[in-house]
Length: 333
Image (cartoon, rainbow, N blue to C red; front, side, top):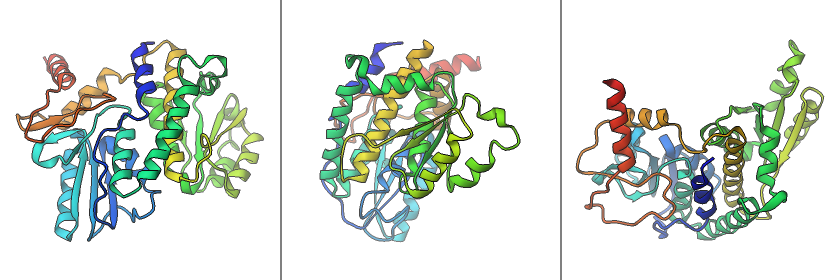
């Protein structure tokens, strides 16, 4: 596989270079497009009250392929009386307050922007500490004791079940996205109460448990501990993937486990002989949903780990986006 993506992962910790000033409380966040996962992960931050607020600050996280929904959410919040902060990977200049890099690693930049903007600088810095430790332990030079590479080998040729406790319910979807987008592998999230699923899913066809693997993400609550016992009697293997390191910050722990999942997915793609980068059809599909870009549109480069900060009046060139548009037009021809 290309070493470029592994280099991006290695340099990701500490690469956030956006605003760090807190916005007025209370806070609410809604995410669409590439901002969806970050909104879910950041919901554990104290003071983030839900999806919408009538006072304080409403954050809307988005990417150009979801611009219509993002615009609607922002307009609703403004009408309700909240101040809106738009964090996005691209769009019309007047609809961009914070510009972050797009791509598979955009979740990190979105999440850190939210942590700082909601007054949780200590959580953001704790997340950076955990990510930096993971970069050392999971990087290409980590040697035989690389936990991400080891887990990737366990996942090879399998479609894992993904489970987490209710207070970390963003993690199964996050890992599903990582395994699919980077690892080119299907993961199956088990959402909500896991017990009805794990007790009944293999009763009619026991052979469906053969070769099956389940990942339990984060801390185990009582229900998840029971689900583990049930699964151990029905499928081949159950692996607990705890939060990396020791931290009292739920946000930092979840972002670190997302980052660990990115390493696992990258090594899984390597195991298949594939690149961990986006498949071309994803870029073309996103370009179709984004529509034609005008001169007043901004776009941060995808997966750029040290994004430049710029005045909103200045245009950004989107070489990859232009290339995707050309590919799309060629396909149409």
